[in-house]
Amino acid sequence: GENVGLHLPTLSVQEGDNSIINCAYSNSASDYFIWYKQESGKGPQFIIDIRSNMDKRQGQRVTVLLNKTVKHLSLQIAATQPGDSAVYFCAETPSGFQKLVFGTGTRLLVSP
Amino acid sequence: GAVVSQHPSRVICKSGTSVKIECRSLDFQATTMFWYRQFPKQSLMLMATSNEGSKATYEQGVEKDKFLINHASLTLSTLTVTSAHPEDSSFYICSARRDQETQYFGPGTRLLVL
Image 1: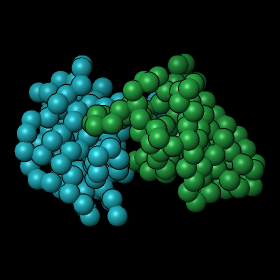
Image 2 (image 1 turned 135 degrees about the horizontal axis):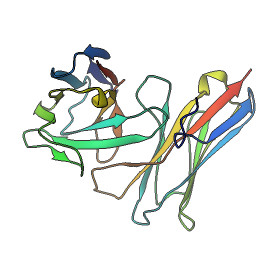
Image 3 (image 1 turned 90 degrees about the vertical axis):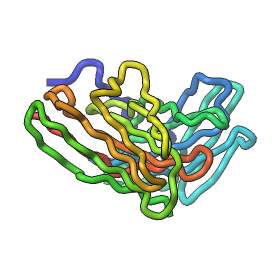
Image 4 (image 1 turned 30 degrees about the vertical axis):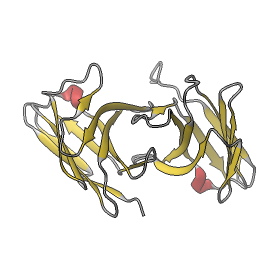
């Protein structure tokens, strides 16, 4: 049966669509943010990062947007592919602080 | 660059035995490594921060005598689960910090205690 309380938010998209995954962070002192992708049975994989002196940063097919006013972070994936299916975690940390604080994660399901 | 390995990838052991998991940074030196535990469909839970040449810093609620961490070199940290019990079954993941903040993760070790 289903595990109560172990439900990840899920975003389902069609192949070729653009995906937007959102993350709210709580620590106003955080000034460094990372997005990780975790495939089933594997460790998290670094995707892209951004510092608080920026609002936007682009990588290959991915864009991270940071809104410090409302403490919101988003990851945009262009032309989503089935290989993008995974759980995506945001992580935050204040500068010089060793530990990362992870969000709860969002599962992205891409259907052909 | 920034490759982190873990060994073993999967281990099954009997209750009461100890299991050692290795974490290596393959192409960079890591003064700081981290050990996480992850339950199914949940986020990563930090267990401890491991600094090369010094004692590990454990998170609240993590037993240091249960989860022994050694970080003897700039490329190797080990986690030993002592006297393992079925409730210790989990996915253990390490990470290594290459620069000031960015952590790169290993592939994880799935531990099953019978």
